[in-house]
Length: 352
Image (cartoon, rainbow, N blue to C red; front, side, top):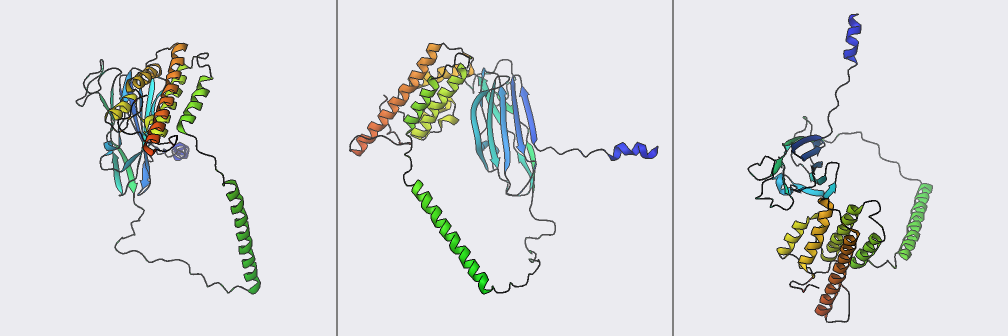
């Protein structure tokens, strides 16, 4: 009877260690989740930190940047615009850390700023929410990661151990027939490599020309307009794809990472004078703002509104491509030409 009572305790499994260190902070309709994995690494291994914010559709969110990690070496590996989620919108950003010393590494507290759409993020309070001293911010708690050294307790960097191992006897010299077989194998391999190189060279002799950004964008808009997005009520997907095409075109044509910016960040970048688009900035702002209202504010557009937005996107691509081509032609003084991908627009260029 005594041994039977001990049996359940003997069979109890050891609790499994978690693979992710996680912290969740919530305030009203906003939920901030910060995850770091793996919880145990060695020096030089990568640590992935994922930041996820879920909000209702009436809020804007500003995710933390690499400066939030202080002295830790961090870089952004993934960042995306807000996407629809079960409760509204989901914002994501992923960072990667590479520890260089052993010990306990602390991922600092990360702050996420939020505000209602249409209000100023730094000055307007959020009704119904508790305002923190730094404005409308949601903070996570620090996360701890154990960083282990590759050295053992027997290793001393000042006195490295001697290399030990099994010493093998020297190989006997090759016989003549072995030399002949080796030379034959080398010659056969060289002949095969030479034949393969000739085949690859023949196929790659005429590579296909790269597609210009405006050609790619116009084709993508043509495919987008060929579908009826209003039949199944997928008009929000239509506007997501429409703005994605325009932003990717700007990135390919002018070298600006527009897909990673919000509309406000994009126009703030333009106002700082780092890039001049040959297009009416207010007209482009009106277009992107109208698309954001459908994507994030649950505005239901009419079919005529969607057709007009598609025409505006085409007009923007035609106007900017033509202006860049004229600028390159005027700068070179040669015959007509077209600007390649990433062609820069001269500062102060006229809007089409």
